[in-house]
Length: 349
Picture 1: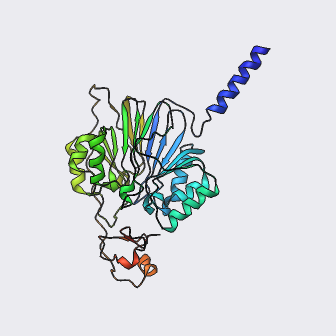
Picture 2: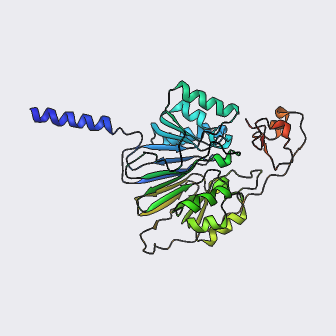
Picture 3: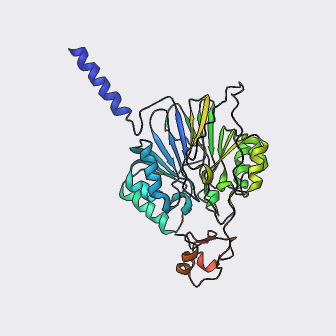
């Protein structure tokens, strides 16, 4: 009888120490690159069943992100990472924070004066979510079988993009490099200090030519490249130059604007890529043995940038009627007097 009681007590203790936050624990790591339009959001489901969300896309994608997480069995987010405070990365986190219990909130620390960023900080404070600004080389303890390390973060960066938290997640022989909006200059810093070689690369700044330098891609040598961007975006993302660089190193390119949600599943040795638009399964191996050949995938036609519309406006209210997300510094409609936080983006929400 005493032995039975001890056994039950031990089981209860184990359950209290290792609570499952989403799907039941498996030996597989699943990384989902969510189609949020012009933005970025990545769900990491660890082998032990815990979950981490890296960014949440723009505010308009909030409900879609929440729906996607629920469809994957997520009940709690053990970590939420806001790589930097730009609206196309953190806007959807408002809906996420209102919909899920969150264990830890990790932020770049870059101060930003937008209403969206302020709203997120208010929610974190209201819900008493532990808040951390990491340091370079910090580890995120999502799963003891994985190593998730911060390769870059800079709360004092002049530019919000260069404040980006860059993460490398490794599970046995398979690794993921998530670049957020880090520029080529930040890439150079990272590759000069650390091993950046990775199986899967989420390219910086949505495939813009301000990131993904030839030297950096040559060092990463990805088998899979992910470009997260919106159809017919006004910035011309992704750059054809960047796509050519990826093709030159033999990377298989996936695009959220074409392939929708992109999921990479791995047991730590082999990995498979599945896209939600049409059937696409690309199994491969990192064990050194040649992988089974799969049919070559034709490059999808690239969306043409939207034509420039009106370029002169009295105020941000008028500008947003034509450009709901505001405009960047390179856009003809950009005016410095409408960029109150001086971040190179006018009239963002």
